[in-house]
Image (cartoon, rainbow over all chains, first blue to last red; front, side):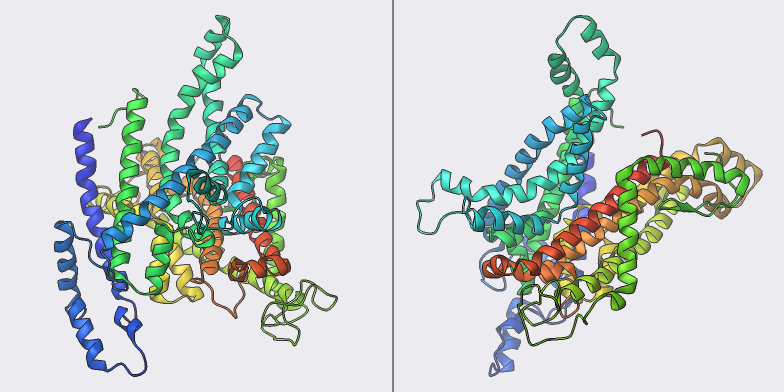
Length: 316
Length: 301
C-alpha cells in the first residue's frame, strides 16, 4: 500500500512539471503582455520597458520558466502582476470560499442523489424509476449558468426568498445564518448537476448489488427489507460510487468558474477570470498549479480510499 | 460479435451493412433495442430537427440575425416572434442561426477528437512498451487539468474564434477517448481471433483496422455522442463568460450573457429564456440518444 502511494506521488511529479510547462508555453503564446494593461496614450515607452524589465518579461522564456520554478521550490508562488499581492495569499483567501461552495454542493448533491438512486434501484422499471431517470438526465443536461439564472430569477427576484449573490449581506452582521442563506442558490446550481450524474451511478451500483446471493440469505434469515437494502446492500453499492464522487472534484473547479461569476462568489473561479482578463500570468500559473495539485490529490485519495474500502482490490 | 472483414459503421441507428446477409441481423437487433427506448427515439428526432434547423436557418428565420432594426429591446410581437435584443436584432433569427454554431461546435469537435484519440489509443495499446507509457503519462497530464480553467486560459490567449474554440475543446477531450480505446484494444488483443491473425502473418494495420477496431467501435460511438452534448455545453458556457463565440455572431451561450444584469433578467425574459431552453433541449436530446445507443450497442448492460 505504502509503495503504491509513493509510486503514485512520484509519477505525479513529472505530470505536474508537464502541466506547468504547458501553462507557461500557452500563456506566453498570448499576444500582448501584462504591461500593456498599464498603458495610457501618454505613457512613455521607456517606462513600459522598465516595468517589463522589472517583471523579468524580457528574459528568454526558458529563463523565465526556471526562475519561476526556482521561486516555487522555495515556497513562493510569485506576485500578481496586477495587484502585486503575493499569489499565494490571493489564492489562499479565495480557495476557502470555493472549497466551501464545492463541499456544500457535493453534500447537497449526494443528499439528493442517494435516496433517489436507491429507490430507483429497488423499484426498478417502475414509473418512479423512469421519472427519476428522466429528471436526472435533465439535471446533467441543464447548463449551470442557465440553472443559476433561473434560480436567481425565481427565488431571488420574483419570490425574494434568497439573495442574488455575494457571500454576505452588505453591512450586515455576517453571521453564520446569513452566510448559509447566501450559499443556498449557488450550491443548488452546482448540486443539481452532481445529483443528476450520481443518481445513475448509484442506481446502477445498487442494481448490481441487489442481485447478490448474500442478500437473499439475509432475507431468508428474516431480516427486514429496509435493513437489507440500507445496511447490507448499500454499503457494498457505495464503494464504486466513491470513485465517481472523486471524479466530481475536477468538475467542481470547472463549475466554480461559471457559478462564481454568476453569483459574484469571491472564489478561485472569479479570480481565474479576472486574472485571465488582465493577463496576470503569475496568478494564472499559480492557479493552474494549485488546481492541478488538487485534482491529482483527489484522484489519489479516491484510489486509496477505494482500495481500503474494498479489500478485494489489490494494486500491483 | 464475430469479426467481420469490413467495418460496419453504426451511427444513430443507421448502418451501412457491408455484407447484407450476415450484418443485417446485428444491425436489426441494435435498431430494435434502440427503438425500445422511447426517450432515445425522441432525442434522435429532436437532434435531426436541430440539424435541419441548422442547415436551413436562412430559409426559416424571418429576419437576418445581424439586421439592426429601429425597435430595440422590444417585447415579442407579430413581426418579431421572440422580440428583439438590446441592439435591435431579431431574437428568433439569432436563436435559429445559433443552432448552426452549436451543430458545428458539437460535431466538429467530436469529429476531430474522436479521430485523433482513437488513433492514439489504438497505437498506444497495440504497440505497447515505451509508446504506451508516454501516451499514458500525457493523457494523465491532460486529464489532471481542470477543464474549464485551462480552456479559458487557452481561448483567451489564442482568441475566441469558432475554429480555435473547436480545436481547444477537442484538445481537452481526446485523452479520455484515447484511454477508452486503449482499454478496449488491450482486452481485444487477448482474443483468439486476433492471435490467429497474428499467427497467420497478417500485417499489423490490417489486424488493427479490420479486426480490432470494428469491435471497439461501440464504446467509441457512445462516447462520441455524449461528447457532442458536452462540447455544446462547454461552448455555451464559454460564450456565456464572453470567451467563446463573440457577438454579432449568435450563439445560445452569448445570448445569455446579458441576462446577468438583473434588469434584463426581469424585464426582458424573452432574451434569455429561449436560448437557455434551446441549450437544455439540445443537450438533453443528444444525451438521450447516447443513452439509447449505449444500451442498444452493448446488451450486457
